[in-house]
Length: 328
Ligand code: F6P
Image 1 (cartoon, helix red, strand yellow):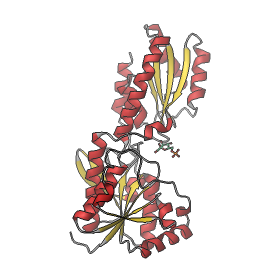
Image 2 (cartoon, helix red, strand yellow):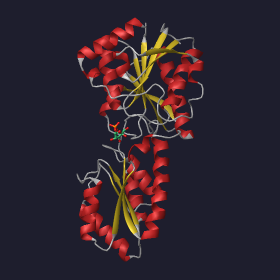
Image 3 (cartoon, helix red, strand yellow):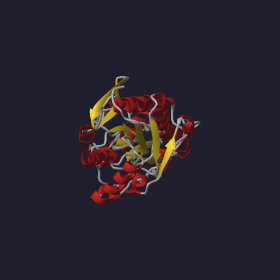
Image 4 (cartoon, helix red, strand yellow):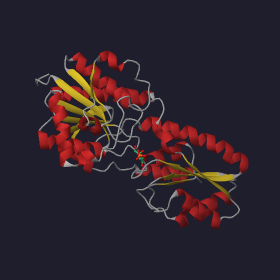
């Protein structure tokens, strides 16, 4: 390793995601492996502002690889968006002799990292941690796979009761700006229709499709709705609209909410987080900065943070086609 970095700081920021602890563990242990000191900053950028910093060594991260949430805690920090907030944060960096930062979070967290890096010239590497999978430069973000499995498990249960009562269920899943969770779980759970933020399928098309499936003999159905779907209506409004137009259906709504962010990470997320954590620290020690570690086709890759923030992680259009065909 070619730089003289002696101490790194690590924090988790934004919405938590299963696997953040596995990433933290990998960062701390890789630092220890390369004989670099490591400190954990609590509650994201807020901890930098409030000087909540604790020394971490290989043993501080025992028994967390299987834990959901983040032991460092997380926050969406408004103060860090101000110049004064960042100046206070930098004082903490100086006080503890932190020479580089690993930021585990989503695009909001990376925006903060980029600004901080440019203002104070501190090397930063981002690790994408969010269940939404909405970050450019990686096929998977940490937590996404676990969230998919959590949603599938929930919808399978909803299906049991939907069938028993001949009901039409609208299930809202997370994804303010991205339909990855909705589209994949829609296919995986055999949903009748999927509404996502990227494509406006229109409410009439939804009605047509539901009428068609009712005619073809389906007595219950599940529609997966991403919270930010393009119709501009929330899941309750959509359900009400359908119920008005299809009074013979007994309609119910189920909002899965924050349970999607919790739970023990899947093996996939643990391995992804471990690989990304190792690569992030080694990248800093090799002199990289302002980059995000990602994974594409099983390989670890790096992208400029700016690209990760501004680029769009496109949905796979083929999945829409697959979903359409299979709901015949
Ligand atoms: O973690 C991302 C996300 O789950 C979005 O899909 C969702 O809109 C948002 O977080 C809600 O998070 P919070 O309640 O923490 O603001």
